[in-house]
Length: 585
Image 1 (cartoon, rainbow, N blue to C red):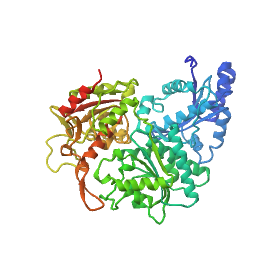
Image 2: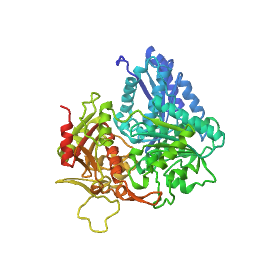
Image 3: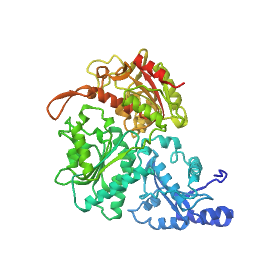
Image 4: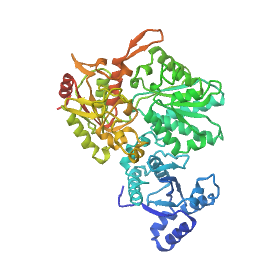
């Protein structure tokens, strides 16, 4: 593409007087070329206004932006429409044009703007409903560069409304957004889910289970959020305004992300609390009045025995009994605690139940890690086959590095985090050092719960947050652990990082991960993760330990977090030696 063709971006006050003045100036003072691009070609526009300290926006595209904007103003008297806000709040309008704009390209720009702005901290709500994702078209190879230039110009006008692209792409909101363009694999599964959901609702069926298996990084979360949102949109198009649809996940950080999505897209305003934890859902719904659709992300985190506020025996069964259709995203290699452990026969029962109805799907394409098949196979070999094979040279640029000292690992991760496109780089570790969220009954000798290796030590996750002031705590309230700036000086665990991405993952393999006689050993005696190492009572009444397999899952979760690289320090001397020898020369 010829990058000399710059986009045209105008910002005006968002009212009829300013719009008329803008039109007059274009027609009487602008060049013929600019007048043609903005008045005759398709354009993209952004209405935005402040609500308290944050923004609300509406993004659109039109073949006649002046006429389209006047149509919006005509609705401003209706208090139930977003256009009414334009009369009550100081608002501005961006009009964006480009010499190469056509209908498909402007729709793609509109969609990308919706995706970015929904993922922006300072955007409280986006008033668009449907997105219009495009397939291939003649000039689609120009889209990314044109969008980059547009965003660059927008940033110069308002850096809060239009933050750095790298900051948006690193955000947990962006990664879980339902506005992403899906892969063909995801799109096929999504359409089949939607078809089966509406067929079940039409036939007044209940107890239907749709089961999606997929390993870490195969796009389960985006598929889940996209299908969940699309179900609401199609129900509205069908005038089915009484749809009851709920999304749940048994993970504190992920539930916050989904709640933000529901709020920013207006689902909370229209339907109330549509995102919750499984126990909350079970306690507030009965089998006598099932909801229409229950979506469960990270279904492997559901409880399969009672604890604290949950008194049942199997959360999945309880949810199925309270919904006409239940859609689950599952990865048995990410089960981390005994209370989440699935007995093989129970798990196989649910898979077979879904398969019998043609409701079983599997996601196979790795989407998180920008790595070669050989690199992914190496991680699989380490975390599944318990072998240390030769580390391949990855031609895609994905880095695997082995370190002799934890301080060297820390220095490398901090260096990466200072780079603009790698700010989301953090240290994470196996749960092999003591940590307790509750204050200790005895007087603590140390200020923080720490990861301690020789003379090197760093606080566990969530420890430094206690030192922040009220204003700083408010700033990070909705951010995932890795997005918070102070966490560069902490070490994360599986319980804060599961379900999230890092640019570079600095993984500390603690004393529970050993290397003996050519095989990796997972040693529960070295772990402080009581939830993984304690006994589990099985359905036949016997008590059994699953510490080895659960620590193996923990290591897999940690080693599949890095999008661009995996840095490793192993506490076990023999494992460290084996890893150093595995480096390709």
